Every structure is written in C-alpha cells, then in structure tokens.
Length: 111
Ligand code: 5GP
Ligand code: ZN
Image 1 (cartoon, rainbow, N blue to C red):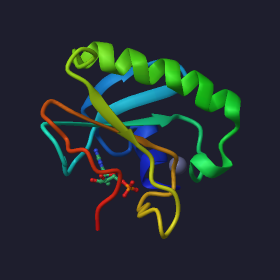
Image 2 (spheres, rainbow, N blue to C red; image 1 turned 30 degrees about the horizontal axis):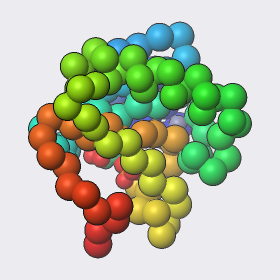
Image 3 (spheres, rainbow, N blue to C red; image 1 turned 180 degrees about the vertical axis):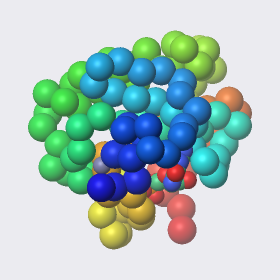
Image 4 (spheres, helix red, strand yellow; image 1 turned 45 degrees about the vertical axis):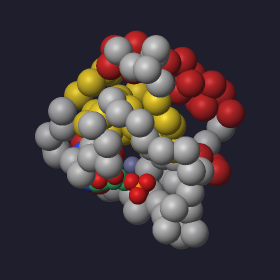
C-alpha cells in the first residue's frame, strides 16, 4: 500500500486541513513555502496522467474549498502536480501541492 493510502487509512498520522468523503488535504511534512498543503483523492490513482477527468473535476472544487479554508484566495496560491520520473514525482498517488502564504515565485519549473 502506498504512503498516501496509509495516510488515508489512518496508519500514518497527518495534519488535516480539510476532508470530505472522497478527498483529503493535509500539511506537507517538508514544506516548500509557508503554506504547503497536499490534496489527494482517497482512492488511489498513480498520477494525474491516469486519473479520470470526472475525478479531476471533483478535485478542482475541493481544491477551491481548501484555498478558502486556508484564507489564501485573495493573496493567491500555486497548484502543482508532478507526474512520473521527469516530472519529479516521488509519491505514486495523485496529489496536488498547494503553495501559498508568501510569494512563491514566477517560474514554472526549477532544477
Ligand atoms: P512529489 O515529489 O511526489 O510530488 O511530492 C511528495 C510530497 O509528499 C513531498 O513534498 C513530501 O514532502 C511529501 N511527503 C512524503 N511523505 C510524507 C508523509 O508521510 N507525510 C506528509 N504529510 N507528507 C509527506
Ligand atoms: Zn495510494
């Protein structure tokens, strides 16, 4: 079972920001910005690339709710999803990174 499935199952503790029946948002253990939240479907999909569009649609709405809960809608935020080896994905369970709380830069990629 993957590490995020273990988080969903409660086997690994997490700092939950928001949750509903199908999605979970929790703080990243190694934050890259003042606010760094991971947003995942509770069901396992390896990455964005293999996730059904209707799940992404539902997830979009949940991401917007997370941004509201964090109070970053006005100040702004960045969403990132890494896909596969060249995308720098380390955990093979679809997740969106939500970065906020400070200016998070303008570049779309960095090495
Ligand atoms: P990726 O590189 O796959 O896009 O991002 C994986 C993210 O998961 C990383 O930012 C990493 O800090 C985070 N992460 C890995 N293991 C855990 C964990 O056990 N708990 C939490 N909260 N975050 C984790
Ligand atoms: Zn998983």
